[in-house]
Amino acid sequence: MSPDPSAAPPPAAPLWTRPQESYSDEELARGLVAGDEACLAVVCHRWSALVHTLARRSLGDAREAEDVAQQVFLGVWRGRLGYRPERGTLAGWIVGITKRKVADALGARTRRAELVSTAGSVLAPAAQQQPEAVLDRVLVRHELARLPAPQQRVLRLTFYEDLTQAQIAERTGLPLGTVKSHARRGLLRLRSCLPQDMCA
Image 1 (tube, rainbow, N blue to C red):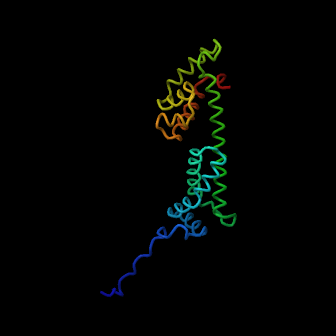
Image 2: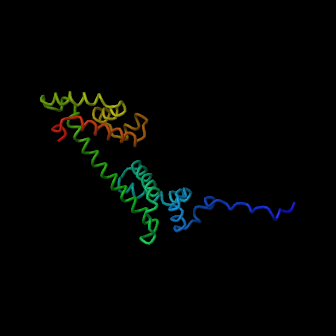
Image 3: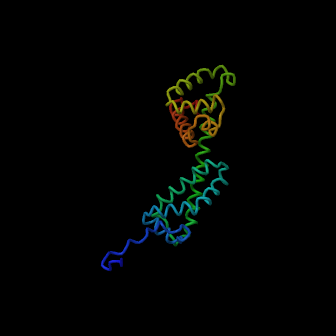
């Protein structure tokens, strides 16, 4: 049966059916700016290894590098309208976002360490503290007991069992990012509830 010449031509194949390698950087940039999610998928496929390598090299932690990589490509999507090809290549723009997200992660790590140090000084076992610290410990434990159960559990495992966040994730079955979030929120709440001289 011969085709009907009056029939409408078949629709063109969607852009995303093309092999990922066939996209040029210029096409990907235009697609991103236009909000084409298929182009974002290709960008993730093409540069995820580079982003992860840069993040892991700076952070020294594979899981944290994975978290940063997710933040990078989320930043690519959210900031796509800010990309200017005249300022540099798409790859260079993505590397720039990666560097900023790594810096954010390192800054957050420093803040977590400061909070852990502050809380650890008042959450330490009684044998390691002077008698006058008893009241401080009682106050901290009281405030700790008021935290949501997940935050309590993470902080107790951190300070009373001396587990790392990765070990806590393994023991509890929680994602590492969730453990970090519970620890950060719990410490911030403790810090806001305790007298200022205890957190100095």
